[in-house]
Image (cartoon, rainbow, N blue to C red; front, side, top):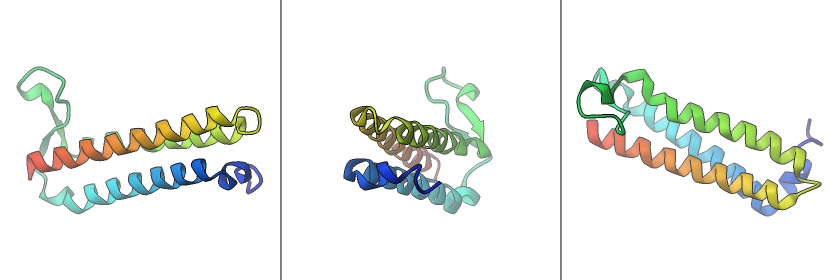
Length: 117
């Protein structure tokens, strides 16, 4: 298993990107766990929907963005490690997209927590 990820660990861009993504996902998850008990039963998580109760989700739905980002992180990590030898640029693009996605989810979570607390 270690040989599978060996190439992407030695590349500085991919290593920093994946560690940054994992760190951001971990910080976001811990932030949600810290504020979870202070949240009301319904949180405004679906802000693109029309005004009213349709925008609200139950308290546990705040974990949806973090779960999606973690899933994207794992898929990008596997794809990046598979294609790194053939196309290093595509591997780096996957890393950058994963990191950008995790930063956006972090900002979304921060903003949602600021709205409700």
